[in-house]
Amino acid sequence: MKVMVTGASGFTGQALCRAFHQAQYEVIGLTYSSQPSTPWTNYAIDLRDAEALQALFAKIRPQAVIHLAARSFVDDDDVLGFYDHNVVATTRLLDAARDHDVQRVIVASSANVYGKPATTDLPLTESAPLAPVNHYGASKLAMESMARTYNEDFALTLTRPFNYTGPGQAAYFLVPKIAAHFAQKKDTIALGNLDVARDYTSIHDVVRAYMMLL
Image 1 (spheres, rainbow, N blue to C red):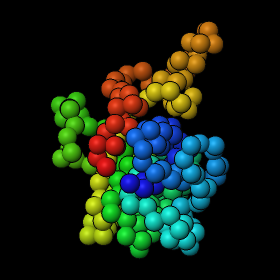
Image 2: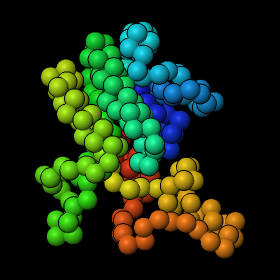
Image 3: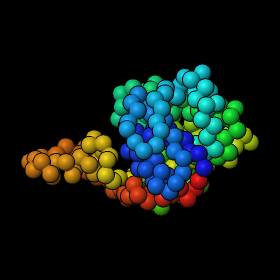
């Protein structure tokens, strides 16, 4: 199967492309600006560029698309950027998938769409109320609603990953930040709110989940 992965140079994208390549899929990675040297083919493209996307899909003809690309750092000050990248760019991508007979599309949303549930509501299920409390979560929820309008065009799956970590994650995320401070033997570390608890999944399990969904 020919699989296109957006956000291919990101934390999840690199791990997923590697796993698909090792499983003998034909992998096409889409990146925002760079074309890293990998055993699979990468294309640098702005997903908001509808014309460029249409031309690329016509050239590649992927059978499946896994859409990981997003503006994902929750504390980013570029508020409009969340909607530009997470909603507008995804719409352009799904248009191209529909117009070029893609069979299956998996779109990565986020557990941020649930907001801050009460402890009495835990553990969360897919039927839990959706109440995002930041622009990242709100943009992902808007993206989900938009994506569902393509349900009749291809097999669509939406995922809502919770926190996960592993090798290659950017140093401004929690676990890599703690590990880096420990490795550098720093005396102090700024962590923000300490009165929270999180469950973490391994990136390897997340990759396996995406492969099983496909």
